[in-house]
Length: 488
Ligand code: HEM
Image (cartoon, protein in one colour):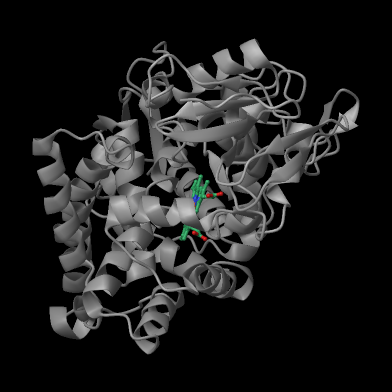
């Protein structure tokens, strides 16, 4: 209430409501609010949000001063722990974060990713190619919402690939086990979406009592479904999940708390990829030139692997190696993420410190304050770094000769953090390579096996839901109908 700006500090804006400051503006539409503040104060400012002071830094050339600062000065864990306790009722171990990062490096990157690609592929094929039928019955059009369809398929396949399949022995046969996988993952997705919709208000602690009860019910549902006890009966559990369980077991964590952690992992691994798959496919469908370029690349990669997808033939064996030969699709993925992911990176100042901007100016930050980046506004939508930032340009991240483009400039200076869908620094998303793989696998399968089109090709791309800024992949405010059928 009585805070005054000191001479070396960023502009201070306390808002107009005592104690709340700008909490309501921030919660209702963070991007709009921050845009307003940037216009009013420039590239660095301190705002009061619900009892806490946040310094936002909007100049992408200066992002490094936060991302690379030592953890002894800027710490992420306090904020993350409080959020995780509120949203997932999980209280972690001291080595939690380090262990997640290490086991992700082992199982979701490099050689580990070869195994995960295979698992994801088998589960995608079980879900996508079952029930569509082949021959004449498969050629009848089916209609669905593109968001619902994409999220459903990618969530379920990702969940099965990471958390494991029904045991064949238990089910009696491979076919029965696959059927159980389809049914149980469908149920899980149905409940997950309910939690997903409550999530932003749960994170801001503004759910009304009835919905609070519903969130509690859903949490218990997931703790039960994903429990370590139930997990023991599964097959093909990924090393990523079994490592996490082993680590917590060995460190004496009680089973009920481990179950809660499993739900956190489900959330982190499945809450973003499905929505991103939707945006990617939709942008390709709305942009014929992009679709043509991606289709040609995919056809080439399949041909060069010596495979031919034909009626009644072998299913496509899409390997990690093949997924490394797609610069055009890579660029389309990166462009989709630039347009539709909007995390907010938050760190707590553990001591009084100075933040140095790229232009040499230094600003004082007080111990206990938060510093934050919102790269969506700070760099993804900066017209100097990305000309016509609202336009989907599938080749924005490609050089003229076809290699990956990494040179982007502002004020004549190279911008290191030109796109940040995964966050950055110590908290960078450890699942990012697996996630990109999932996106590419989904597009490969859709383009290889299906014909699909928007029901109304003139329909505009639905706007982004403004209530979800800050949580990763954005979602549309409404779905868009499409129809699909097997190609042969
Ligand atoms: C398009 C898909 C995805 C996006 C956009 C995304 C984005 C992010 C972001 C922005 C963060 C937080 C970074 C920060 O606080 O600075 C994060 C954290 C995390 N992500 Fe992802 N993610 C995606 C997919 C995945 C997948 C597929 C997995 C695992 C299989 C995963 C696992 C995690 C985990 C475990 C964390 C927490 C890391 C920690 O606390 O150290 N993510 N992700």
